[in-house]
Image (cartoon, rainbow, N blue to C red):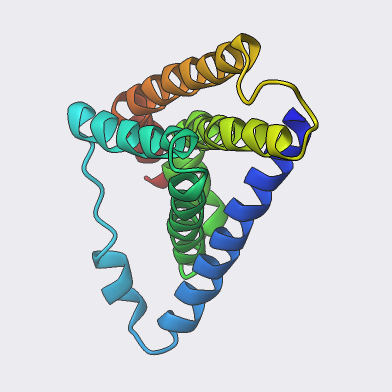
Length: 179
């Protein structure tokens, strides 16, 4: 069951990612690369980044009460944004260096946090569907709630770590690798 939800989550995120990646590369054909690079500003402010990322996690988790709709929309949207971010690095002379410097340090925590919270956001609707299909006796069991809360807690812890890394470590790593 967890595998199915995880695969669904990754698939939806991948659709958004691929769309963003294609979009930025098509978009860039009409614009000067310097213009695009100037518009990629990064604000390394811990409270702002943490709150922004917590909102994403909470919107993913809200799929438990929106029957997966908020999770689906946010997976597509965030996949699209990550696709644009990664795609825009390919408009430079050293894309792998930029990805390693600006995305990878905190992305190894942030993207899994997003995917785990999305899996949690799909969990409750999935359990309700199983109940409606007469595949289980109760729509939501205590075990389902515990699993949802465990995934939610893991994603929140990871997003806090990601925000810390993004603010305090990513700039130092980027500065080192890009200078």
